[in-house]
Length: 282
Image (tube, rainbow, N blue to C red; front, side, top):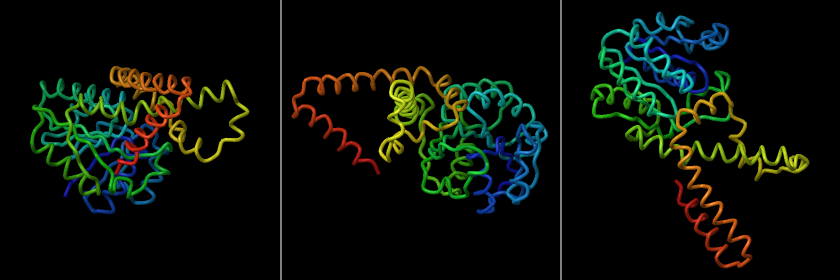
């Protein structure tokens, strides 16, 4: 049982964590911290939060568990304030979709004052954002990646893993660098690709959008995500994203050559290879 769970950023992910923690009775008290008091009111009215504040230091001061659910670059900036305000023994984690910069910032702070931190990344979400679309079951059956290092306190890794498992998630552990490389390939680059695809059609063949059916709409759904959030992700993970984009560009070039050659069998073999890999997904 968490005595006081402080959630910094009560949007889709933070709000869903609050709803799930309330439903599962994981915390005696849940405190929401945000920049806009008005946006915290729905969660208060619904009883998802016990208290809400725009004062970060006050919100985390007596918390024994702190979940940072802000955008990735904001998390790096908030860590120092959390480190100064959180009590001894507090567990701190985050939901950022990049981990290298966040973990390095936490370990720099830990050199001055030990505080139990381990990074987290729930592989769950939506192109929509905000508390209005938060769901208590968002993490049920989802994968959450935790990123302990050799400097992580074992109790922090155990506590953070236990929280996500209690919210219904499957937890996997990766080092921060492997995490950033892998999510660049399966999450960040797909977002970049579909954003470029939608932009190319909208600017070069805008009339085609009038005929866009389910295939185009499903393929490009994530291009409707918050551009501020994705700007931060691309900047924070730019080295891994650029490397993965290079590999994608090579595969696209190869497919272009096969189409230009007009020979069916090599083209079909490439498409079959992709189909088989996609069907292997669980």
